[in-house]
Image (spheres, one colour):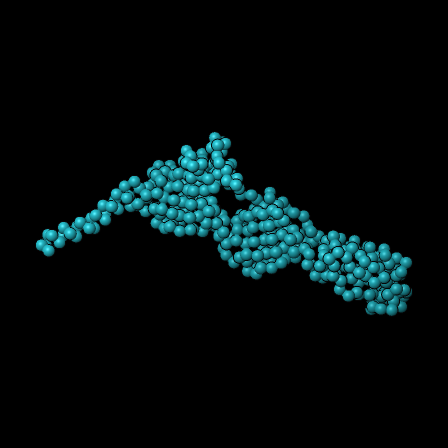
Length: 352
């Protein structure tokens, strides 16, 4: 049935199965993949410590730097010269400058690659040079963690290959119960979200973090609105783990016995076309974002519907509306008349 391009679908077991199948959550492992170990790749803005060692007799760095013992011997021939350069920040062009070497490309390379290039350039200038390059401040490979966490922060990604739960632990974890928190990961143009509890239960969803990922902890980001002949008309927040129709009715304290039409429980939703029957999907009018306006109708007078309600999922921004019983308006009218007539009759009885 359709009214003004809005589909009205009676909720049955088959309908509930289709909706459940279409709503299978996108897993981090599928949407983002497990990622790769970042390793020790250096980026723009990283700060490096560079030490250059020269074997005796030191020719290039012999006049500067300190002495260090090579082996157990303390003779002058066993002394090497080490020159520790000032800290070097990789500039916006991805380069650093080394005395007697010149400009060296650092961004996108590992410490070992930079060491080898410096050594090759010092050949013929320094006596058997050796170089050690260390990253002392990693500013280019970080994950930003925000939201309902103990401390929002930028967490460095190292060669260890930090995973999602690692970075959450680094910032002190989430501030709310695990079952009420969803984790959203933004990686470039891709955005994926999962309940934190599901991530903990499935190790495959504890994906490896990549530089510039943004991790957002969301506390109860989902809600539905209850209207009509329910005991409580309100916007109701629910957990990322999801909510069924039966649970939703419980959270609004059920239906009003004197007003509600048990045959007239409706769920207003912009539905994914994949959740609809083929015949409905082919003739449906889509919204600009590719959704189908749907009204699901639930008949709670049928006892079997209560089993379906225990599996039919409520989605974010759903509107649950319970209509008034057909005789409700008449009963209210009779109530008004009674409250007016009976006092008058009582007054006449006592002769006033």
